[in-house]
Image (cartoon, rainbow, N blue to C red):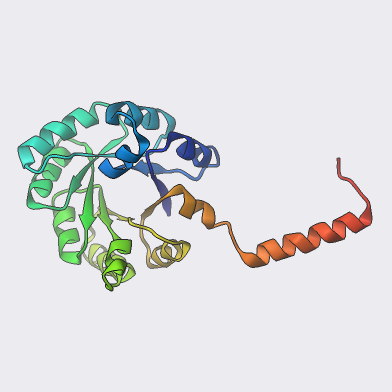
Length: 217
């Protein structure tokens, strides 16, 4: 499974990237706002740091304008994945970008039917938002399973990028199903290392080691 980091915080990306925990990055207008930086500047810095895909999102709502914005974003670096919303205009833009060899991340997916359309339009990645489905008492993880089954049935090459990850359980659940990629905030990825029994065991080891009176260095 590939790990994408869902942030525009360059320092947080660098920390995870140095540990080999970053296969790509996803950004969106809300994350750019949170960073407080110019979209072109911060995206270029991220692209220079990370070798994998970096999703940069268009903000237009009409296909022609999406295409113009996407082509400008694609000029930032060769590893840009142009991010478009799962609307009819977004699918039109996706087809145009894919036809020119650009990576495309189709975002805000909430149904298997939408995921089929994205694959048909040539999306590199489909981003189902599982946390937001959970918020309205629908099963976000089930959506990942449905898309996995459908894509496998027909040999679609579009990668399933599980998004709106809220917890470590989300990550392990979609990994078990076979999501190709997850994108999560740095805090959730780092939380994967946490377990109370690890903490308890380490505490006991340190107490016992102190009693030996020894030092390693």
